[in-house]
Length: 639
Image (cartoon, rainbow, N blue to C red; front, side, top):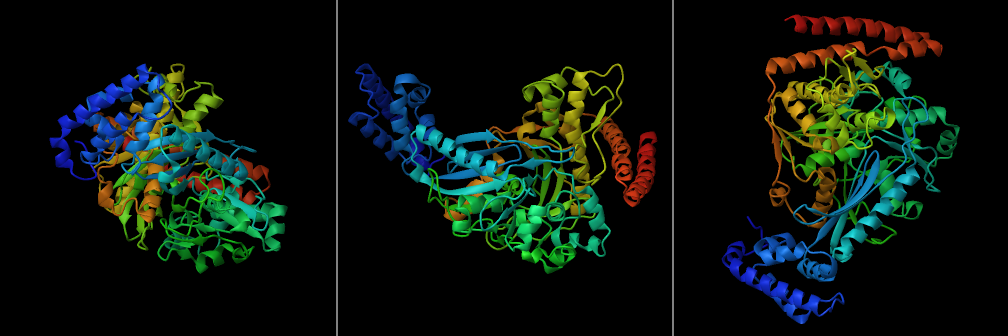
């Protein structure tokens, strides 16, 4: 079906005419090539033909035009001397089109994509940046390097965009999506970071988290902010910086300490830093700090009071919370090739992925298999507070009516694959890990609990470490590769079970995206374990698309959700469950037993550090929970 901006029926009636004009166009280009008139401009005959073709219904995309005319499709496939002609044709074909840029700042790389009105990425540039691991469990980024990588990606993406014949003037707005929780502190007068950004996966705050949990009224915080205290939210990272870093305290005492997640830091820097001081965040990111009331979309006095027991957090400069889509609040790029272009939308990466999957209605769920893995279920305009280990988060706030989700987060997904590649030397390419896993028919009895940063939802076990169970002489590299992929699928199954209990509804399908979703083996394993179909779109840049949609709504590229119905729907792959349900349940029970047995590693470390109380608490809690958990699992195994 060809989609047109108007006159679709008329276009179909004139299809033969389009083909006729296409033949004339191809003939004209061939004549031009023979005459060696390759000066970057189409001949007058070609221009007349092109204009005639576009009169036939004003096709919405160049791709649709080529679908209507086989000779033009032949032209698209050519290279070499026809390049200038193709660029000129593209420029004319898209002169009335608008595009949206999307900054996608992730955990291991930054990217800049440019989408057309149909949600198709027409240009992309990606750059990785340094991962800093000063100590076991610590994970940091250079905040300045992140900004440089984003600026470089904008430049590279725009070059690719213009190389294909597009004009940067057709870019209507820019959206931002970013890794969440990662914490940046800087001097608001100089714009210089005071410490490396502490990444969301970092677990250095484990002892501080135990301290916070022991404070009076700590169990009532989740009702306000949607999250329970753990190493995951930004608050523990900020408090650790204040407690342990002299330079941070000096700037704090001087009244110049600024705190923000990556979105606030990027917007502030891209706008020119202290010169313009555009210092904002939005609800999908602010809800990950434990400072925002998820119902009012404002900083909560109760939360600030609770965490200000040693340092007055009101002395810290925090970004203003604005809507996820706004024509003015985010300012504009201050420098670079897109200087002056407006930033009109921002979403935290996992909320952006649900928006990119068009999860606008309650009951739609998506799972993103990236560095970590994140399952979100849209619960509508009323927040659902979890009682089964999940978080309540904001999906978006486009018009003052926030939409919420239940979320389950897995710390290690794609990073587990990278562990096999970089630390164990299994391969230099991620897709080879799947190929290695396919060399064995099953996991050979091996279970790999990839708790490199403890275990996140729904377990929230901070003192768990990565552990393999079931290693025998039979175990080989293929079994380890397969168990690494399965670890993500097991945790997703656990989150999905908790989600159904919290929401009171059973999902009928799960939409998937992210790098690991490229593995058919991983996706089939996931479908077998959760017992429902998985829907994988052909175009999987859903996180970046979500940011583009937010910016596009604010700037008028799209006016309502209905206009997005046909975006990214063709070519999807469906993975149906194939495994026997009893076999699936048995696999999952073995996983749960392994989870119970991977705990307690920090008790000995706490004792060595002289923290006897913490050590005893860990040992007592470990023994009690292991006994209870193993008893439950053993009863299931023997049932």
